[in-house]
Image 1 (cartoon, rainbow, N blue to C red):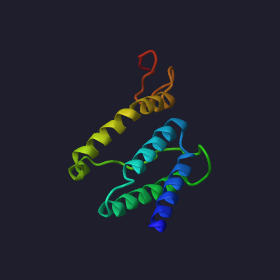
Image 2: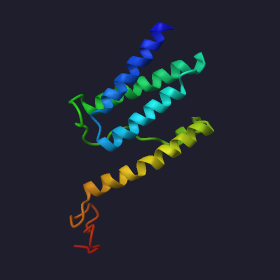
Image 3: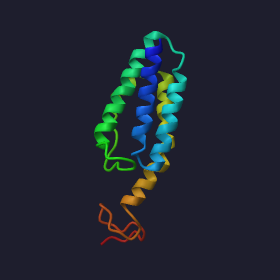
Length: 136
């Protein structure tokens, strides 16, 4: 049991360390989510431990690859993977609710990112000025 606890702790700390490279808004959300999930799974049965650890190890590897391990706040471009709607068929009610809550919590972050990439007065990718509504 000691080795298992050590493995969980190493994975947990590695994920939080990787999150240091994320933009601050995303890091706060990610850190809280990781803490909540690890706390929620602290006393689960053996049948849930392996899938839990595998999914978080996959997340850890994917994030490390996307960040390129260049140091704090160095994340550029898209982070994460696309989510297919068909994957919802494999979720239970609790997981769907968690996904909904996660989506609600990242909506303000997505709006801020959209404003950063399309500031007022700048030509947007749609050929319009974002603040005046006039087309060019």
